[in-house]
Image (cartoon, one colour):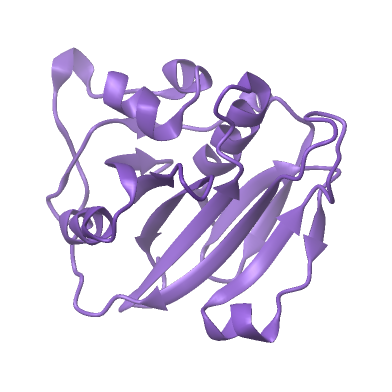
Length: 192
């Protein structure tokens, strides 16, 4: 349970996490073991929110007063296609720049959640773990040096692509910032 808390860095996860009954292991559809399952509910987010639907088959619950930001040409060429920020201030975290970004990349031969986790760890990211978020198998990760964390998962509709959601800052030392970021990441839900 310590590793799960470290990966997602939120006390709220203790409430949200519904691990297998009686220590039963949990597995993704590809057979990769996951360390827990999180079922998000809007009421546990520390903010009034809005659902943002993506044509890629998923949605996120983001703070209501955040706004969509432009994506530069360089960012778009790198696979980033969605950004939303609080523009340096909001009613929850106050005067602090906070944001979320969504990107995609080719899977380049990665086929299982285990493959994806190994790739992120080999790339130097820390706190790599595998979870089931609302029915989507994901890899969690963090870069403390660059002050962001996120989740990566195989595109739910188009084979051969990996989607990644990043939140910054991590919120180290600021429980509220940490909890907002965790709620955003934990809200990743398949779109009906």
